[in-house]
Image 1 (cartoon, rainbow, N blue to C red):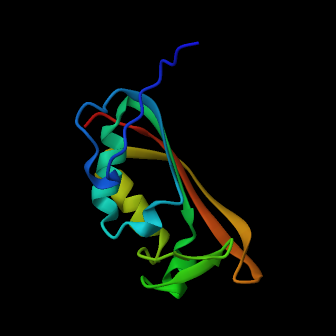
Image 2: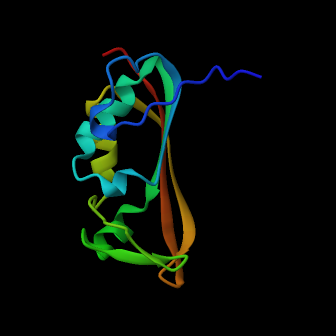
Length: 131
C-alpha cells in the first residue's frame, strides 16, 4: 500500500513557501518554546488556505510565566526544557489576529501542574481570513 502523505521537517517560524493549501493546522504544546510568537502565528496561518481551521494548544500562559524561560522539567527520567515565553493569553490572541486569524473559541482546561490543579492548558480555535 503506497502512502500519499508528504512530510516536511521545518522551523515553525519559517515554514516553506509551498505549504499554503492546508485545511487544518494543529500546533500542540510548541509555542511556549518559541520566543517570537508573532513569527510562529504568521507561519501557521500562512500554511492554511482561506477559511482553513487552526487549533493552537499550549501550556497556560500564567504557568509559563511562573516557570520562566530557563525552566526544565523531569519527564520519564530526562530533564527537558519547558520554557515559558508568553505571560498572558492576550499575547496569543494578538499574534493570531495580526496574522489574519479569526478566533472562534478560546478555551481553558484544568490540569495537574507542579502537583496542584490549576488552569493548565490554553486552546485557541479559529480560521484564516483573507490576508
